[in-house]
Image 1 (tube, rainbow, N blue to C red):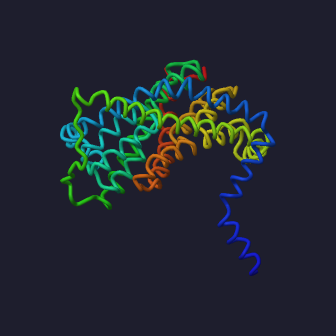
Image 2: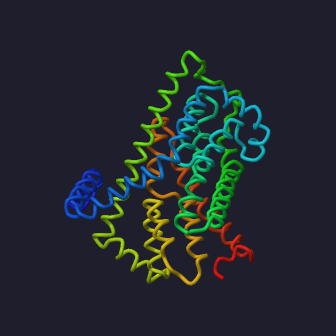
Image 3: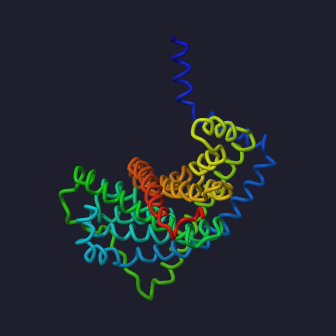
Length: 343
């Protein structure tokens, strides 16, 4: 028993070195397929992520040098408090998170928290519903490119946003009251001023910071593309899909869901390419995956918020709830005759 206990403690202490060593071995063993996965990940990042995110990243960096957050806070406080039980400044990351995509919501949450505009608990709760897939990705990549339908993209975008807002309302009403900061007179710690004399410097800093964030995202996309490739080539993903498929149904859909919980884009692409009698099944699963986001996105968010020492637990709970809400809302909409894609 003592030896068994010792081995358990030793395994717990060395779990990450073991995982990383296995990863290196898999990179060598499956080098051919990993090379293709790396190229595919880089291609996805360069052609989809950079064009859609880079302008938004620069824009949000520039906005952080203005008093826009204070302005939004004053104007929208009367809406944010009764609906989300949050100060008006939280509308800023909420809006940007909806129109720009991951991980801009997390970046802006960290900005207003560091500037003293919200409490730590409010920032942690905001992470759950201010980080979403952007309209360009849902409509352009998923709707038009994968499904070949703008209407499907619009439906997924609508239910995605509605599910996110539902999580925000629930967190604000049920959880927010417990941790509500009693002092609502938040003071902006870091006042930044932008004028024509420092515009060039600020623009350069904004571009550099945005490129740094894009490189981080690109690294995640490539690494998780390789991980999925290893799971596929080694047969692990196939085995899990077969086991779970025998319990829950279609093996191909199980494979897509497993891929999507690891890396969102790969999973969505797998699900969209599954040929079934009823395409509504594909749409519902995509709604779930978009709501959840996947492990790759979660680690991207964690890399952004870790410096602010914010807990990511509310984010994980919120994304699971958002996935449930998204699939429920999508199911209701697909019952409307004009949106019946099974015909």
